[in-house]
Image 1 (cartoon, rainbow, N blue to C red):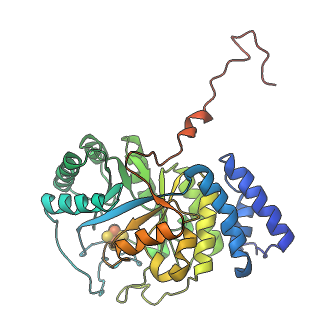
Image 2 (image 1 turned 45 degrees about the vertical axis):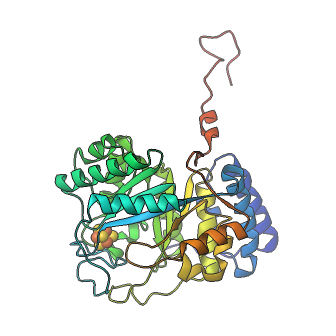
Length: 366
Ligand code: SF4
């Protein structure tokens, strides 16, 4: 039986937030109890939560917002049954369905997005995983994009990878691989029956081992408990990702989760704050569903996440690019340039070479 977490009182919330900020500034994650207490708070105190997590965001990322852009290279007709996905087996959502777009078309879309401020392009395809021919096709696309704009980051998201495929993508010049864990391991069978949580973890590990920057996140609003939110956040932290997309369910009619509209803006902000505390110096990306669930509260989310997607999602439309750029400027943030580092360079300072104790004349650290 799961323990009940009660809402913190005003005084204990102040202590909780102060402890969370202090730990995060030293790159330490919350305890499970702290994470649960943060999620259990009252809507009335959500601005305090945003202000506290915003301090951590500013410490590591200033007021920069990184823009990412999605290219759906192959849409719909997936044999997998992920319940949240409009492209799943049996989906009746009236989405665009097409096979692989051509390399030139993908490169053209990428170039336009870069022109609009995108720093990373994410090449995505529906399906359980790619064939080796698919990987070659994507490798050609990566080369075409890099040929036009060498300093754009290219992330690839093709599902479960088999032996050698991650290495081939890295060799082709891909920078990153995305594969989301989506929800807690204990809840995974409730949102997909055709592959497992462990399958996803294995692919992320393969991609990291091949030298691709790991990108992995989650989706909320699928009936998960606070315990599930915390579990997936900590499971993601174990994978040591460089970027963590936080999605809020887009309930597509014609999918099993099509009638789930359970999120509020305050709940979304609290989840984003938790992710900032769990990933203080990692890219936390506000991803799908932000427009429909955060609504007019979106600018507050910029105080928590340091990245967003520009433009449309895989099968649904996002906000107009110009509106998002205006929102960023109005909220006092600026678009991160391609020559700027996203992750704090201070990470290297975490490794202090030992110059005391054994082998030295300096007293040991005891
Ligand atoms: S999330 Fe990916 S694997 Fe799952 S149904 Fe959608 S396209 Fe297929």
